[in-house]
Structure formats: C-alpha cells, structure tokens
Length: 469
Image: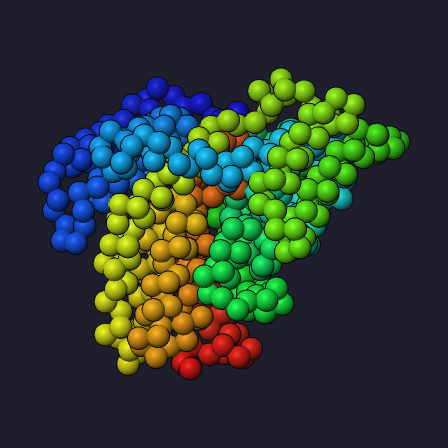
C-alpha cells in the first residue's frame, strides 16, 4: 500500500501546483502559437504536460491522473475521437504488466517470497549493505533467467517487502529506498544489455537495423554495466545512513522441503521466461506468455491464486497509468507534436558538424528534454532514434553511435513512475515518492552522460563503431 500523507502536506502540494496547472488548462483554449505546430499538436503537448505535472505532483492518485489525461485528449481535440484517446488501452503492454504483477502475487501466495526472504537475511548475517549488494549483483545474472525487468521487479518487490517485514524495517526507511530505487532503475539497465531484454533493445535494434544478439551485447554490455555500477554507488551514497541499520538474523530452523504449489509456481514463471527468451523463433508478442502465466496461476489445482488475491495484490492503477502513457505518446505522434518537438530540440544540430563532441553533447541534451516530455519509452525511441541517425549522417558521424547515444540517454533515467513499468510497480509500494524518483532521475541523467562520454564512446571505437566514420 502507498504511504498516506498528512492533510498539511496535501494542502501544500495543492498550493504549489495550482498556478501552473491553471495556466496549462487555460492554454488549452489558446489559438495556435507555435510555428509549424498544428492546434491538435499544441493541445496534445499541453495535455501531456498537465498529466506529467499531476503524476509528479502526487495531488491525485496516479490512476485518476491517467484517466484525466485521456479524457482531456478527447475533450480538447488533441485526438479525433475518444476511441483514438483510448488507443493505449488496446495495446498489449498494459496486459503484459498485469500478467507480470500476477507472477509477483503468486510468489507471495505460494510461500516462495518468505522462503527467499529468509534465505537472503540468513546469508546477509544482519548486514543491510550485504542485502543491497546481493540485490545489485543479482541483476546481470537474473537477466539471463528472467529477461524482462518488469517481471523481475514484479517478483523481487514482494521478496524484499517480505524481507523488510521480517527485519522490522519501516516503510520508506533509507535502506528500503535504496533497494527500491535499485529495483526501479538499475534493474532495467541489466535488461537492455540483451537484445531480448525488453521493449528498449528490441525497438532500438529494429530502428537501427542489422543488429544480431551478439553484436548488441558486445556494444551494450560495457556501457550499461558501467551505468549499473555507477548508479549503484550513487544509490548507496544518497542513502548510506540506512546501511548502518542492522537486520535480525532469522533463527535457523529445519527447512521445509519446497512444496508442490511452490514447484508449480516456479515452473509457470520459468515457462513464461523460456517463451520470452525464444521469441526469435515463435515471434509471440511478450504479452502472450504473460497472459498464459496469468491463466495458469489462476487455474484451480495448478496455480496458487484465486481472483480475490488479485483484488488485494495487484495495483490496478498500474494498468491505467501505462495505458494512458501510451495514449499520450500516440497522440503526440499522430498530432504532429512529437516530430515538431524533435525538430525543435535536435533539428539544428547539423550546423555543428565540425565538432563531433559538441554534436554528441547536444544530442544528449535534446534527448533528455524529449524524455521528460514523452512518458512512453516506445514513443521516445520511435521519435528520437531516426532523428539522431539523420543528424549523424548530415554531420559525418556514425549514425549507429548517434542513435545509441540518444537511446542510452533516454533509457538510463526515470523522472516519474509512468515512464517505466518497473518504476510504477515500485512506486505503488509506497517506499519512495514521485519527488524522490525525480531527484534520483536527475542524478542518473548525470551518470548516463558520464558513462556515454567516458565509457561508451571509447568502447564502441574499440569494437569497431567509432564516432567518426
């Protein structure tokens, strides 16, 4: 459950956000004011900003803010009809998320979460830092077993929630914040090193073209593991006070053998993972294995769940937030707002062709600004990568490197929960606020830039993809 706020805190947020929200709502009625941007595009952009402000300000519940955003798309004329505004709800991604969250609930209900939490506590021997390090070092390994970061987050969140309950760690304590931010941010980075690791690598490789599994891993592993390492150190630095807290060591008792329901739960989850890892052969949408697991986990005498478990265990607001973020991204593209943003942010870069480093820096700045405004990673990649490759060709730089620079810039950060399924799952547990995610996202922006300039560019040159062709 999410943390409750005092009436004073809620009132302060309302006052702080009343003026910008009122100004944005009033701007919906303005005539076209931006050259080259249609009225529908202007309104789609304004509705997106309003929804982002509501998500980050936490005045309303995320699901309510999401539905307001979708409603405004239709009412303002940013989309041609309500059906167009609801396109995100027909997208497979929200259903994929529901399937993944169901896996997490099944891990708890079957008893696996408590079993694994006790094992982690025993091996940590009362040291909070050891718990954190075990988690961080598990990401690259677990990626090869469960390639989807959302799946790992949906399962691990329940295990570590159980661990904090057993250890008497209050919700929102510093050590809990560090673990949850690692789950929402660094966990995702491990997945992008694999071509089969999720939407970001699959979509980026498709746009760039000519990427094999091994070529992708060669290019991405070193930069992303560097970001993972630096981000983990950053998280520890920001919340180091929490690691001084000791955790109780559970009494060693005779362990019960793994039960039949636990074995069946493991088999169902690993079965879905096998289907995700082999999508190059069967070409199933990732949502289908998730939905198959959903059905299996709710099948009597097979899975551990009944529907009432989902009523309590699945944060249904996640479905609405992800669907709304996709609708907003599609509205930005269909209305022309997204291409206009791309031209404004990075369209003038070709004049800097004499300075390769300046082009890279301005690509990162443009991609950062665009990532703030585009909540859905698919929308960001679809818009930003072709522009980056075009800039590369016009300036005599390697278009593949330019595209990867932009991809890493957008993928390394989460500024608000709706930008990532993993972050949304973590946020719903109430350990970190939207403001804390924003602050951490700003720090991770700096980490991503440093990794690109000092690690990625030299590494890519070493493996045959230099910045200058």
